[in-house]
Length: 165
Image (cartoon, rainbow, N blue to C red):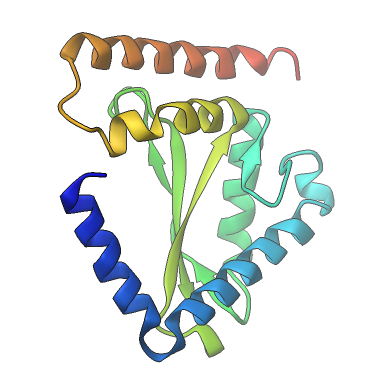
């Protein structure tokens, strides 16, 4: 494991152990999960949310979900900030909406981030996470270019999958 990453984990662990923060964050996480578990059965989101994770089959489902988040705004336990779209043309093929969630009430002062993705972008992100976020060394530029091209291909597949829908 990279020493810098190991040091960061130690600092985060110490922070989380202070004042019951770990339990509060876990409770906030569970509250957000429950929200999306229940939201997936709402008529306007029918078929959009495929699991407790915020993963959709189609890009148009992501758009519905983003609109829903904007309208709902949050719950007594948390509120959603404006979703931030990560354009694959500007982010090396990465495509997702990031939404910061601010705790409220019993979760005041806490925040977390949701990543809203299609099933294809989630799979690609899972496959390449350790290569791009925690590399053991520098990544060969040829590999980076190849990974970007594959990510762009997956984004194209996502766009074309709308025809199936």
